[in-house]
Image 1 (spheres, rainbow, N blue to C red):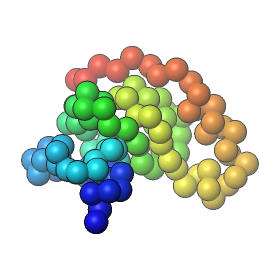
Image 2: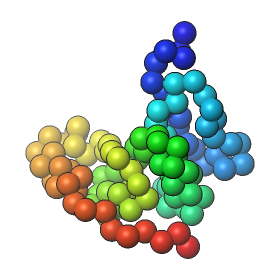
Image 3: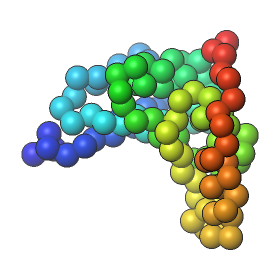
Image 4: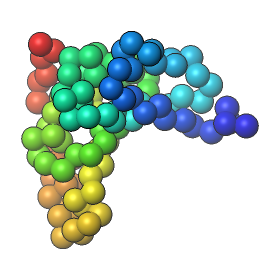
Length: 109
């Protein structure tokens, strides 16, 4: 039943060891989740890059600062979310500015 729906895979801490289901029917997006430390890891950046090479959308979860938005852009995220904008709607213009900024160059350490 789910094979007909576009699916996202939530990439959590340890996904590099567990593996990404690249061939899953309907896989359209990687949802970058997990701890803050994992989100900033070279492993997650490499997984995001592999997803982009496969034509997947990349979404960064829990983005509540310009610094995090710029980082997500640098590793290829197409979108991001953060509770700050939903909790404080007056911040939406700021989030839109972050989303519109060109991505900085990223170097995997």
